[in-house]
Length: 281
Ligand code: SAM
Image (cartoon, rainbow, N blue to C red; front, side, top):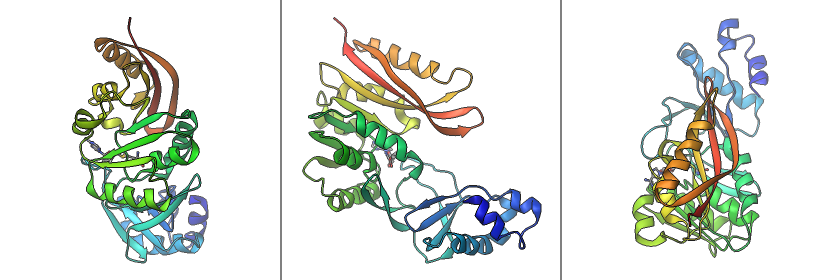
């Protein structure tokens, strides 16, 4: 995709500028680019060219801040097309309405979401501690026979979109949207309920691992622990962390799977550990 865009811009940008054109995400009918400083004077031209090579794109947004803050959102500016940040995106047979400025969403996790959904066994109770607009939870509902999927997010906009997405995908009988802080919600209503817990927010996984353990049934279960790992020992520190913390709380941890999801920075990866937990003794 970036190659087509570079070809389109061949006569408008210098060779050095062309080298700065990188891959971009398309979410529904919106494209998101991250233009480096030297390309900013040409942002409208680049946005327009992108719409010409991607005919389905109606809006091009430039990401002007990193993903940040409690809600994991980013600042976006419209550089071409319609003035909006809301779109509908289709993934694994599900439709998601999302406002890219108000709630976190990444199409780059599509493979991982479906992978986890396929691990869920009939009758399981799943708790998603950091659910965003409900993508994991709804894909799990569509692709498994989970009994219930409790789906928590602290961002009121993400929660609203999650409710909408549950309705659009007709999974309201099994996906329960909950607005609030995952720690408080678990303390209040979900302790000891889950067969499987998802923690898709690497920045908070370690702080909330005790919450995930508390969410599991007393007989144990599985936690999908998202983290960052660095070469050369990509999974080692995360594995040591979950083993030690589980043992402190009377669980034995077994690593059922370890996966790199995507590259995050030089030699650093967004990773996931599938951790089986059993009470000791
Ligand atoms: N799982 C989502 C997906 O696949 O699209 C992405 C989730 S996003 C990386 C992390 C989410 O965690 C954000 O929507 C943010 O609002 C939420 N969050 C942050 N702190 C939280 C907390 N203490 N309790 C519940 N949700 C929280």
